[in-house]
Length: 109
Image 1 (cartoon, rainbow, N blue to C red):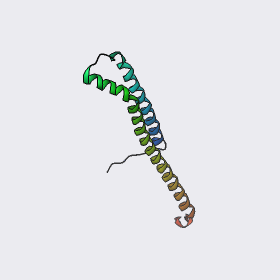
Image 2: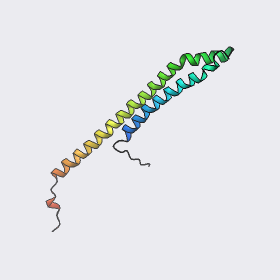
Image 3: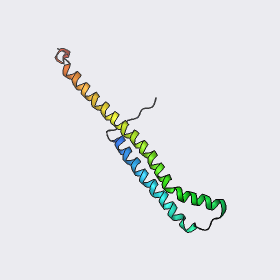
Image 4: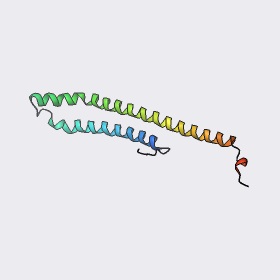
């Protein structure tokens, strides 16, 4: 059985990283389209069709990647909410149990 630890800020940091990755992917796709501009008009046939299709679909590809990463981020936010809520509940329950405990009865004399 594996064991892993989630700190207080682990999932929030992961969410920020996911958001940053989306920005980076969008930028890289746009850079790829710009880098390919000198090749416009150099293709014929199927190569030209594929190249034109990619250029036309670049914004859609970017939007699809962002939507996918957005869904991942929603899941990460849900996990973070669950972990924080669980941690708070555990602390509240422990404090309530300690408040109800009779520590004087447990003293060794």
